[in-house]
Length: 418
Ligand code: AMP
Image (tube, rainbow, N blue to C red; front, side, top):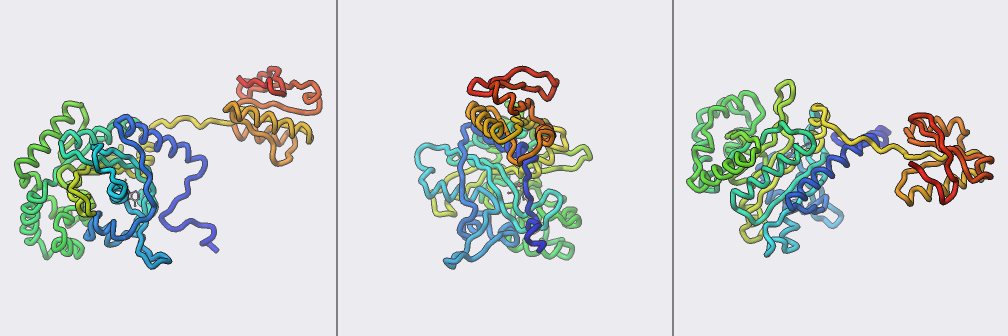
């Protein structure tokens, strides 16, 4: 029976008290992106499994361990999206959006699904806001994305976030760096965890991502990717930084950032908030991906984007005391006594709602006293009591619940609420 009354592990209901915060956050992020020319895109919740194994990379944790994959009734393998970039890339290709009007700039607010161990801000179903910019290889595009990430966080009240940036170089830089990493980690084979030994074979960069303290200690002494960048990649990274400095966007170069997914090249970054107890909280991250569209069968097209986890962002905003707009209470409650008065209350409520004024009336057959108590609970700004007398006169008293003051009010089309 517990299955009927408790949500699946790692999922969370957003109750009516909390939804205004979510609506505010999602709206603010979408509107900020719009200021930069990004338009919202909506993609399916599930895709062909192959899309993710191809794009996210089949050596990543996300693909190897965390995907919600199932066979549908048509015997096709489908997967609930673990992130948004792959779906947006697929849609852009499918609808020919990578043709002429480049750059393509899109934003999205989605739910994502990853079979992870729930806890400390980790869910199996969570929300991401993200953006993608296609078609521009220039450092200007990287700076634009970084500026947008910073502005999004600033808009919601997290002005002290710092962007930690790194460059993973191009394929050539990566090849040389990977060799250097293998050489370095080879010396520590006896001390690395089993997963890292596997990563060393399949994708040595991932070893830098290990959460195991002993492996982290070893990784701290590993060569830095920044020493392996070719001239072009160095110049690109330098230009990105110059633009950020010019625009006054706070950033820090952090050579250990490799990001969890395989498709990144050149700029990668994380948006980092330092909590009052000094903990490093990553609100989101992103980067440039060169090979993704090609991997999916399209012409080589550069892309760059980021995604923010909204659960973590909301938790950080709450911990930081960021302001949320106050909830709009019910403007007027129309209390009634008797059936005819109830019908009039309903008519007046309809009239007011047509004018955009939130109005409620009794649906429970409650006594007048109970209706007043309910109006209080709703935090209604005004209450009108409609009884036989008021019906006859076509006029009643509008009571301000703040001040207790009453003013006469018409109980027909002429009804006016301040
Ligand atoms: P990623 O796509 O892994 O780069 O994640 C981007 C952001 O999504 C992270 O910075 C987190 O804020 C958020 N995120 C990733 N996985 C989860 C999860 N299991 N639960 C909640 N948020 C997550």
